Length: 123
Image (tube, rainbow, N blue to C red; front, side):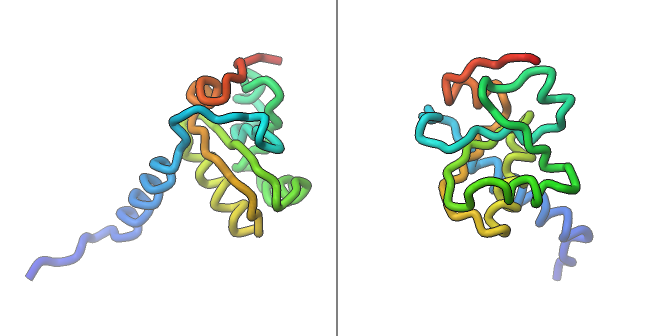
């Protein structure tokens, strides 16, 4: 009889991360059908290049929940970050906080730019 894996929590975390990333948008996204495009990276990352018109709400900021609660909970939002991982975490947090609109993980900012047609700009 085989023993179960030693670090089951690591396996669960990896599986959840993969499930979130596979939910990333890979096709065209009509940004005009969404209330906002949200960059969930840090303010420094945002200042180095972000999608035109995107708002910055850092998912790693301790005030993330308070910041997203300023948005309409029935709104539709496109989220992106560097790779799609943090956007997936942000979507999970938003769903837990009662957001019921369409929440799309557009992946990394280059992929999000390609999918939405929005250019990358710097401050």
